Length: 152
Length: 152
DNA sequence: TTTATTATTGAAAATGATTTTCATTATCAT
DNA sequence: ATGATAATGAAAATCATTTTCAATAATAAA
Image: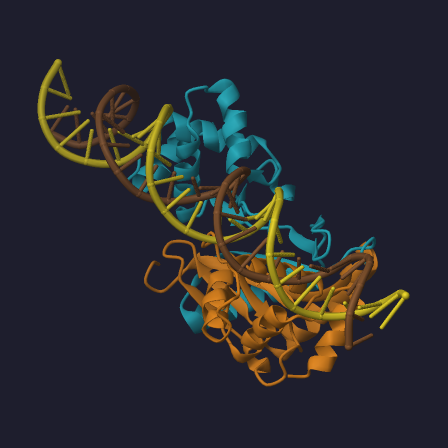
């Protein structure tokens, strides 16, 4: 979908918009979960059996550099990936959630219902930090740690 | 330092306060950096050469469960650890910083100068989430992603 | 204090995610 | 088409972390 759009984007980075990359991006657009490299590999493999796990890793690395994808870490010993904010229009709701992680049982709760105030403040902080550290901020993640209902 | 204090704490978790554990905690108290398991192993090894890397991993896992230590991830493929807020009195300034991570070169900037407003809001959010999800929040971390001055 | 019980330890092996290497293939500019 | 170069997949290598297991240390019981 929107091949031209993607092609341009890749060209801008001196890269080619190839079939494996296309399949991987399609997969990310379709899914609304936090996928591991292996998840993506297995899923893409169904429609494109030639894909290699190596390519998935390489593509994700590139997509991360391009700001298209974000890497998440829940302390599982492997990374998970999700599209950056504003990339997949349809499933916007999935993005930009924050995480509650139980330090005892490792249970993860996502939440997306931010207060107006929260959103406003985050924007302010971003603006402030951008200026102070001469940093172009494209995304943020908040992790809260503690004990879940069961482990309390 | 404060052996009795630690001993009690460990006992409360049905665990023993052993020498390796003591050395590891001392190391964490002394250091003011984000240490990897290997960093700790090498450092502790100097004064306690019998220590094994396995024990470091196991101890860090336990300390995390006990809420004494927090695991950080900067996408390097390995975890880093720091004492939780309020644990090491002397080096309090080190803790509770947030992170700016460059998605291109992986440079990491820590910042600790939070605005009053920021601190207040985070507390409010924590209170709200605690109630809503019946979760006892003990810590939080914020990661901002984007491009550093060089990579912009 | 001695003894019994159980948690903890270290070494080595195993695991599992991610990277590197390298020869082959696909894509793009000409 | 053709040549130059980026991208690919398979296999091997790497590196952090876990598991296994026999030996040891710390605690509780006698």
